[in-house]
Image (cartoon, rainbow, N blue to C red; front, side, top):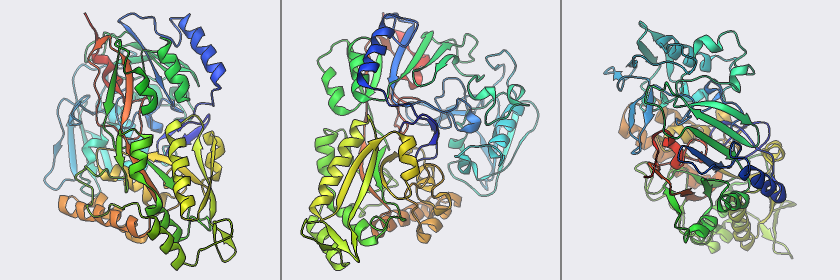
Length: 539
């Protein structure tokens, strides 16, 4: 998702949305960059890489949510996720020691780590980071993800102890969150101060420039505790439009880019490039606002849920690079509730509407009590995958007698309309079901930025989400999330469409690029460059 001012995506991340880029202007910028190796283009050397991404953050401060899921380049967390998505030590010297009751996590810190300004990293920085995020005055839309923390304290310079309110099973995964330097941030306004755009961290890279809406540039941190990266310059070119990104990659302006399946396929014959496919939890869904007289009607929700042809979307839009989605949990996940799959059944959709009193008019569009079954569905301009999903969804709905007007625009236009209009949204987080479902579905965050965009309100779901979050027993948690998924069959506040694989095309010039299992966020912190600090030029 992309917008030019402070925004939060559906999973609660605060992000900066790039302005819409006209094709001609973007191509001109691409040519300029090619002639300017120090700009947004690649210089072709083995120690420099430029990749094309679709969005940029609003802030580079972890206190406001930047890098909260890891791979921030500028910062490190206490822990990190490896290729296999298993936790490994980062700023911590080892995985935490957990008390038998699951309420205390003790971390011993790595020795001789410094921030990029040369000052030492200590336990005080960890305590400062977490306490500041939890401060009510800090504008971090994701702070509820740390709700389990009762207290965090340092016991010496090298030990940090977290005490929890309840045995939150995935807590260790939350400690991939980046740590900031207390000595730099103290005295600043954490919401607007210079640290938000001029960060200092312990990570493998240092920010060297940020032209908002254009590019984010990094240089290797020579004093990085994990060893100085071989890729000395790394640039993320912000290119919202998929077609423009593909054009600039083909022109040699980029070394890599994330692309939708139809555009990635155009590089199959290019022997100098390699396509990397990442399996994901990333879904595309249609929000069904409860405040809209049409989308808030339970019969309409249920009819749309079976009118949609998910298999056709996977085959025709994703070209097989994905799978049907029946909720936020992929069908191949251990957390998926079998039996909640919904088959495409147009006749059933029509019967649901007939039984609820939605009658077809002369133009085929249904109506009830003077209300026509029609609504607007927004998608972000330049996002071809969402556009194709939106058009296919509208086509399927029309066959059932529901008229959907698809409309594109920038996020600053879409967000004020989200309470009444539907949106082709995205989300997904692989580490734990709490990470995505809580902010997606709980009524307590409805309408908070991009959290619970559909204003979904289901007491049974609210209760199950709390139980899933607060239980330390795996069986209890599975039962809770089974309840959530079954409730979404009864009352689908969103029409989940597909889980999509992420496709990246990268110049085959380095050893080291790989992919992880990815969430919704892709390109910025994910992609084959999630471990760019470990890349080495091919001999």
